[in-house]
Length: 195
Image 1 (cartoon, rainbow, N blue to C red):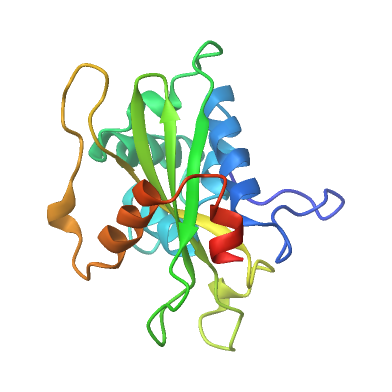
Image 2 (cartoon, rainbow, N blue to C red):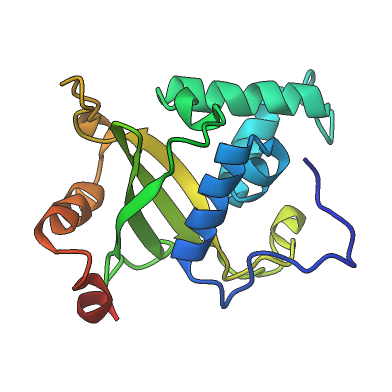
């Protein structure tokens, strides 16, 4: 799950739109490609996964099998482990992608997406990574200004009537405000409203 050789074209690039990153992430999950699933998470999320995978805080790179277990635990904690179960019959469908047109100062640009997989909907949060500013050397990864997945949560009710919303962890209201927009705006109008 570490970075690949330099001869391979890097993905994403700063020009890659967030919906393409999301599609690649969904494809990797459907195909069971855990290294690609890990790669398409944001720097901060990868750091959290790696910290959980390390045997000792002094260990620089966690063992790949421990990283895989930590990645699976991330999905289990979010009640989203079924996303990692390859299922060719259950094609993911991106219902909508919107972003806050005016994020608060000092915050990363964010897009929220609603995705249906089988009978369930999920809320994906993507963030645009900051450019390297000379600070933490781990941020000098060549992916400055690229979109990556930050969070995945069940969203709404599945076809069995179970409520999967977890609004109580929404501390600033921005996510709730954007999700409200998702429900109000048809997917045909999203590009024109937020272009």
